[in-house]
Picture 1 (cartoon, rainbow over the protein chains, first blue to last red):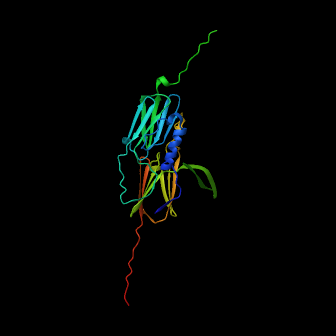
Picture 2 (cartoon, rainbow over the protein chains, first blue to last red):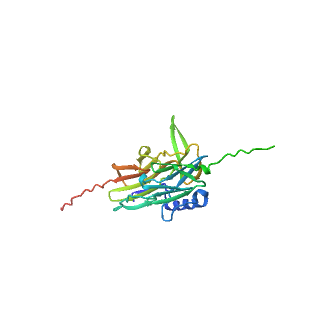
Length: 149
Length: 129
């Protein structure tokens, strides 16, 4: 073997992925309820929120933007990736396999509905960023209380 | 997974050690053929200009600067991954032909082809006395 791995461990290893997935399910609270479909790779996601908007980012290195399909239904955001390139490893001996090349299908459930018409998705260097606006009906509202003497 | 990396800086003849630099360890695939070793690194957020590959004293070091940052005005509601620069080191125990080696970065994935040095085979003629 040509290489010895000096430093290993990373989110991509299959065992770590599985632990991450269990961690997601156990501690993710509302956002992890959607989860991933069995048999698919589970790309890690971050969800950021402010008063009116939501930003969802997913790590999908190695995928082209054309490989990714995004759908929004009320409060559920589904990200699907289909890897169309089959790498030919004929003549190669495998020493280490931590990188995920599988198709993925992940649904993130938000604790509020979003306006699908205002969604904006960008892809850069293997990171998918989806900007979403909270649906008007689910935005926080200020209620003025009239005090009567 | 994050790791702490001790960083040394030479300042006016003194070595200043910074222990707070944190890195993300990229996932890798390693394949070996007769002619080369192919290593695939997942480094989302890194482009071809922000990755450095160095080879010194049999140590191959790959470092990538991550352009991804937490958006301003937002707070994390669910964090499934950690962000930061990437670092991974390997001990290479066979000679590498650096002239023929090449690297390709696409969509946050680095593919490094390390060419092996072909052994010089010299035949020694055996003469009869």
